[in-house]
Each structure stands twice: as C-alpha cells, then as structure tokens.
Image (cartoon, rainbow, N blue to C red; front, top):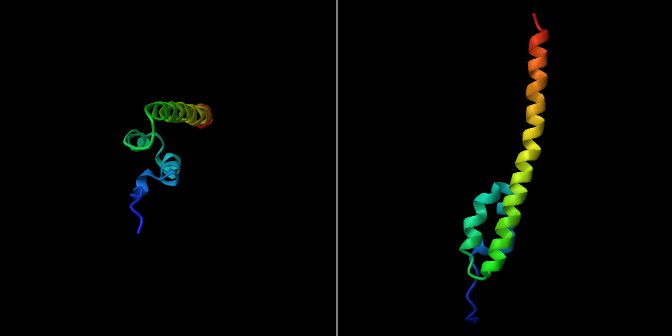
Length: 79
C-alpha cells in the first residue's frame, strides 16, 4: 500500500489545461491554490494567461467592430 497522497483531480495538469481552454482566466484561483507550484511559477502562469486572454479578446473585438461597420453601411443603403 502506498503512503503517497494522491493529487486531487482539479490540481492535475490536464485539468488545469482543459480549464484554461474552456474558461480562460477563471482557472487562475486553482493555480494560486495549487500546493506544488512555487510563487514564481504561479506568477509566470498568471501573466501568460492574462496576456493571452487580452490578445484573444482584442482578436475577437476587431472582427465584431468590422461587422458592425458593415451593417451600418448596409442600413444606410436600404430604403
């Protein structure tokens, strides 16, 4: 019988990666409560996730703005 304490499912690397892919920065509290991550590693992971989230938001906002402009132009053409 092993005395090794099993890691909880929500602290597994796979669960964290899937969480990041599904809900993005809302998984950061799990990163910060992770017992095996050092403070430096938590800061690096948090920084990367926040930067990627901002970039993805900007990448999604630009096409939405373009579509809005096109719809305004179409609206002006209709009688």
